[in-house]
Amino acid sequence: MEAIVDWLVKIERLANEFYSDASKYFCDDVRLQTLLQHISSDEADHYHIMTSASQYLVAHLPKKPQIEVDDSIKLKIESAFKNAMMLLSSGQLTTESVIDCIVESEYSEWNYLFLYVLNSLKTEDRIFEHSEIQVQRHLRHIENYLSSSEYGKNKLQDFTKLPYAKKEKILIVDDETAISELLSALLEDICDSDRAENGMEALEMIKTKPYGLVISDVGMPVMDGLELYKNSIPLFINPNECFIFHSGKLDNYICNFFTTNGITFLEKPSSIMNIRKLVNSKLQLVT
Image (tube, rainbow, N blue to C red; front, top):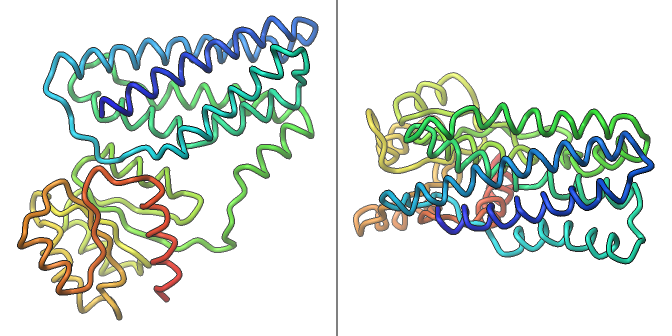
């Protein structure tokens, strides 16, 4: 978790600095300047929140992360700002290049990770509450501006366009709401998802709705992941192809169970890119 927070502190500061400098550059464009000033202020607030999260983690027992942020994702988001800052310093920054930077960074994994950290910590300290509302308002300001120009609307549509005409329905099972919400958000361009907090709740959902894939934790209250799998076998044609398990506690018994039954499993923290690749692969196999 500390590594994720440290990177978020870095990117929030980078975004704040770029938006602030760019707002001064576009002093003749009142609407763009106003947007940049507003989202610069948002990023300053987000920076301070992440700094508080970092200090909280130092003062308390480290919270083991469920997700690992790939270097390729970090580079993609950081590059959007660094490229725009190079254009700004050379006097070549245009409205279109600012929009490119905003869309390519704000509609990436960045804000999902921000929410994941705060949702993980909000039960520990009230300072981390209301995070989702903050991000929603931040993106709403951006979308209001983008919708006012053809370039902005087209850029947003192209960047968030769903690659599948009809998306598969999957089920995410985890007793940690923060991780199930993050996985749902990170996979929203690939599939629609429902969420369950334990194996029993998930089993009842599987009985009433067809799911192309189940992504499940192992250790959960009421019914764990292994019992969920065993009880779900009659409900799937190829049950071993319909499950991906992820856990931070994979002992020999659990590993042997997965290996013997040909079930895909990941050890936490799991790479975002690995999760996406596995889900894509599984959904192409399952009919």
